[in-house]
Length: 169
Length: 169
Image: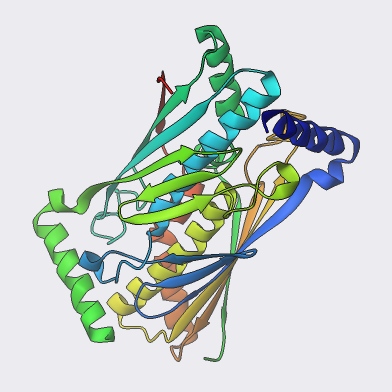
């Protein structure tokens, strides 16, 4: 299992080096808002329901968008740990992550324009089950935090183009 | 339905103005990596499976972390449109959003350190079903893009503190 994961990583890596165009991809989310704040999302073949909790007017049919950001960061850390541990030959039996984000809803509610609408800060706690040396784990963590895609997007702005159009119902 | 959503928004807004401490919250994601890249996530009472596609060594049991970021942005736009349309009294029968992100995996694979690991750019297409005037929709869009929490987090870095610890398996 672990060696075939290594094989998959090596195969992708060597293909991307040989044919950089194969390294480029576009991912897509398509969603439609239903009643109140409930939205149904399609991500390739996967479906997801997003909603807001009852207190704010939702029906709590799924996690909120900002919770998805925390989940994205936590799982991206985990996957990046496994990928780099495999690539670097560092033993890693398990990894679990807790991510917390602090928000002040006065930003979203436009009550105070000095308060940002998103998380003011995020804390990530990574728990590694590994027999590797401290030095090896420090090397692993440095590689992970330099290459974790979601951490990158929360640290360095992503140019985002928004277009809005009117459609018939 | 629409008026009781307005009531919920007005109630939250006035509570946050009266008691700012009530506007502050902390959200949490807890996840554990299983076999290969598959992770099980808990967000309050909600569960989510995250994975990578087959090509890269995963089993495609769920969306990837970077797809969750796109879903978070798309649904956050939708929810923010509904909330501000309701608050501003602008008719909005429906909203659907497509989000696309371009990535070059040579960043994640550490093949070229000048390529960022996250999305290089994101495109958001918002489709509004509304009988409102163009001017009202422009006002709505401006309010949404100033207060959408996920758009904020992709535009302005979020201070993120990472801690790593070793645990027994």
